[in-house]
Length: 117
Image (tube, rainbow, N blue to C red; front, top):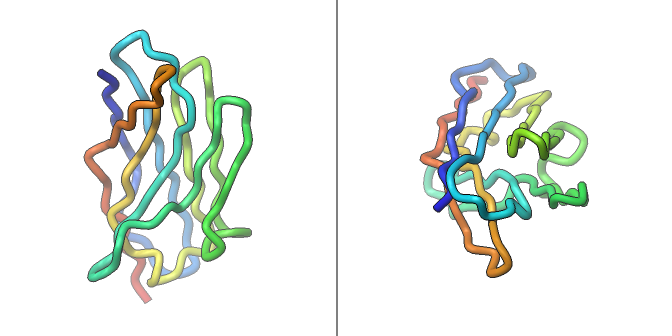
C-alpha cells in the first residue's frame, strides 16, 4: 500500500501562482509514474500532468506553458508549479501514482484550488 500526502492549494487570484506537493510513502513498492489529475465543478476528472520515473512528462493541452511538473525520486515526491492561473483551473487536484511491477494505482485525498476572477 502507498500513501500519498498532498500539500499546497488554496485560493488565489487569476494570474497568480500556486505550488502543489505530493509525497508517497508506505510499502517498498517502486513508484513508477506520478502526477496530478483534477476535477472541476460539474466536470469529469482529467489528467493535468504526469511524469515517469525516467522523467518523461505529459501535460494536458490546457495547462501547457503555464504548469510545470517535477519530481524528486529520492523523496518520492512530485510537485506541480502552477503559474498564470485562470478561473477555469478551479478544481480539486488529486495526486496519483502507480507502483510496482503491476502498476497498481494510488490516489491522494485531493486538495482544492480556487482561482478567483
